[in-house]
Amino acid sequence: MKVADIRDLSVEDLKATLAEAKTNYTKLKISHKVSLLEDPLSIRKSRKHIARLETVLNQKLAQQPKTV
Image 1 (cartoon, rainbow, N blue to C red):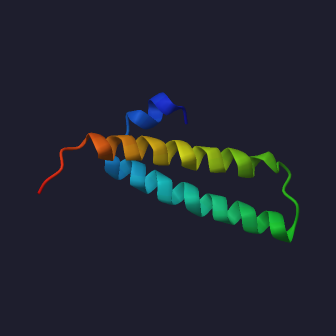
Image 2: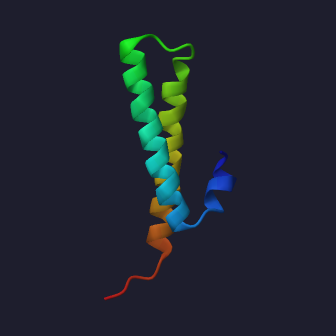
C-alpha cells in the first residue's frame, strides 16, 4: 500500500489495518525463528508498513479538533 492510498483511509480503517499488520509482523517473526523464511526482507517491509500506518494515523489524529 502506498502512502497516498493509506491517507485515503479513515481513522477506523487505519486502526484495523494497523492491527492486522502488527499481527502479520508477529507471525513473520515467529516463523523466521522456527525456520528461515523464503524472503527474510518481508520482515523489514512489514515493519516499514507498520511505521507508515502509524505515521498517517498520528497525523490524522493530530488534525482532529480536540474536545474538552
